[in-house]
Image 1 (cartoon, rainbow, N blue to C red):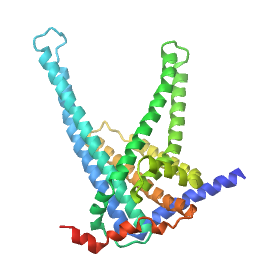
Image 2 (tube, rainbow, N blue to C red; image 1 turned 30 degrees about the vertical axis):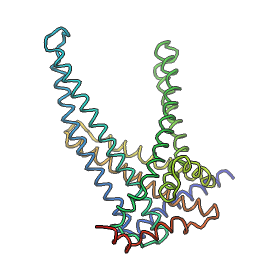
Image 3 (tube, rainbow, N blue to C red; image 1 turned 135 degrees about the vertical axis):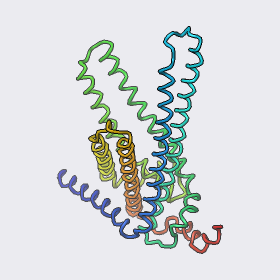
Image 4 (tube, rainbow, N blue to C red; image 1 turned 120 degrees about the vertical axis):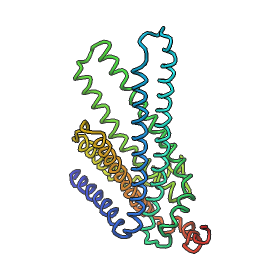
Amino acid sequence: MDRFTFLNVLMEVAGILNESRKLFLKNKKLMFSVLVFPLLLNGLVFLFNVLTIKHEITNLILEASLLPIDPSAPDYISHLMRVFADFRQFVVSLDIFFVVSSIINLLSVVVIVHASALTHKDDNIIKIKDFPLLTLQSWKGPLVTSFYIFLFSLGYWCLFFIILYPILLFSIKFDSLPAKSGTLWIIVLWIMFVIFESYLAIVWNLSMVISILEETYGIQALGKAAKIVKGIKPKLFLLNLFFGVLVFGLVQIVRLVDLRRSFAVTLTSGLVLVSLVFAVRMFQHVTYTVAYFQCNSFQGRDVESLRDVEYSKLSSSTLMGTLP
């Protein structure tokens, strides 16, 4: 009986993936536009960041190599301050890249979820040119929700390191565990935490869709996601594992490339990996949009009525009147 239940869940997962794929075929112009444009933008940001950081790392290494060994040397302090200045610039560049990438990812999620929802509902009122205004009107809720998700994720992985610390302490200081055994325990612990995070991400991912398509965000969106997802948790858990394994496989494939050949090979491989992972994550949000409508149908709600008032206000004629 359990085997048949598992097969049914696998079939339901395949059904969600197939329905999500059909959304791209249902409205090719809209769906591929909202996927390709953020993909290109994310790739350009990655290239700019890598080229900038490469120059800064080169300067940092050069200044560090010129640092005198003797701290009493007359020019030691001046060299040391230049090293600190280069390192500070390197950290600032990383912070800027993180902020810009986070903004692009957030807006990309907003756009892809809206496009998926409209395509799922056969709503052709809003065109591609109307999406900037639609995105600007609905970014605050996802931002708040993503902040709470970040806090929960940060706390979760802090717990991982809290549990990991005793293992490292006993295996290194007291030599109570062989080196291979200690490494094995760390790997097993990491896999357990990754798998359980995939389970927690069910509510996290669904809450992002809710905060985009409804007027609910933050803790309320997380609570609502936990409430309506009860009927389809197993298939969404398998769906998360599927996308996790897919991303892991892409990373392993790129690792097969000999990055020592040239900087151009390294840059191209990194760009391909970032683009593929970004595309997979965007498609994952499409599947969660499909799952959102399924959850609402299980709850006996009229999903066609969700946000109809807001979408009706954003008709093409109204939007064209507001645009300069």
